[in-house]
Amino acid sequence: MAELRFRLAEPLQLVARRNEKSSAELSRFLVKQVWTQQDRQCILDTLAQLLLDKECTILIGRQFRPILLDLLERNAEAIKAGGQINHDLHERLCVAMSKLVADHPNVLPYTSNCLALVTCMNDEHKLSFLKKIFSPEELIHFRLKLLEESQLQNVERALLLANRDSSFWQKGKELQYTQGDIVSGDLSANVVAVCGIMLPRLQLLSEEQVCNPGLRLYLF
Image: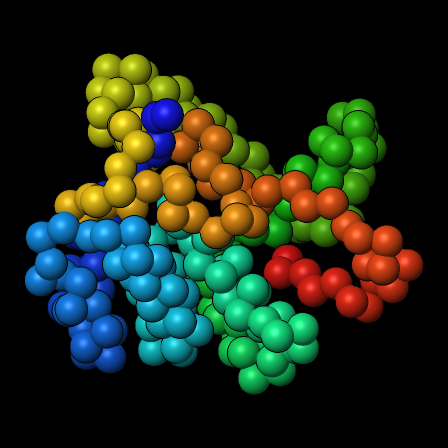
């Protein structure tokens, strides 16, 4: 069975060099030539913990962006471990997410655009909706940004076709031992890698959760 692999060694080395606190945690893995499945789980759990450290949040978020959703899910699972909410971890996760959102100031325009698409707004309704949220200058900037990114996507598609082996996630045979890589089988059960993009896995709610929404804990 083919698995997707993500190269982790280089980002780990960079983070260890830039931050003393993370260096102590990560050095024991960097000296190993081969990572077992247990090693890879320990690495991901360590990165998830470092993500909640206010001194490491932005660094971890930027260097491990392709697996950021997995790290967030691991923290969400830790918060709910034992059947009770760990309020200290929950608060730290909220702080970390506020830093991550602040590091990506274009969350809001894309969210608004997605909402317009999901609700099937026509062009007139979409424009009216966006005008209620953004100033005319912001709208112009957003449209130019979308045009620029559309052009970049076309370039990226061409590069991916020309260099199939250079993507974040690479296909390979199922591995028990790796050299500086993690594989899709190492990911949290709540996420899945689809075409190299990490997405939340659809979870069916229990009858108790449906009847009592207060039991549910949302990341976003």
